[in-house]
Image (cartoon, one colour):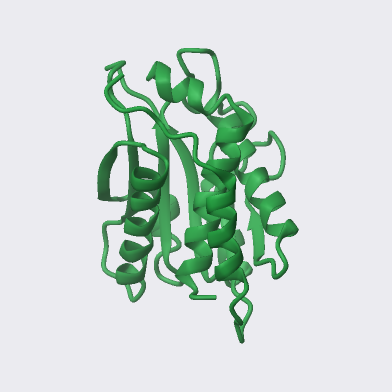
Length: 213
């Protein structure tokens, strides 16, 4: 394996989280976490049999748990809370109805090349008033996974993903591909509960930092 994924100390991440959450925020921000796939749509299937829909739901639930345990939790909503299939339009309509301040879509990658690895973060490929903020958040997430967790960086990219196109007009939005389930190392990494918690910490930390709490 070319690059070893890090078993990051929770103490280090928790300390950073406490510093950010300890700062005052005059306005509570509303975050929508889009949990990819679900129900009959399994998404990518890992080399170890793990399914994308389960990985991203585990991460989303871990984000909620960590957020609820903080002294000053953010206002976070999921597009699905169980193994159900929600249409792409319903996901974006939910974000609009909630007047979300940021939209983060969680996914895992897959490739015919078993050596493909790393994190990709996407923003919409169209101009909007929130494009610059979306790009900033995308780079922050990319850096967190690369520097703090040891994932290879595959860059911030532009795409016409429907969930991005339909949300970028009214809030910053990004789509994160959390490693390749077709890669044995990365597929096995997300099988471990402690690694799911670490990934969730990194995402929540960057969202909190995005609002400069």
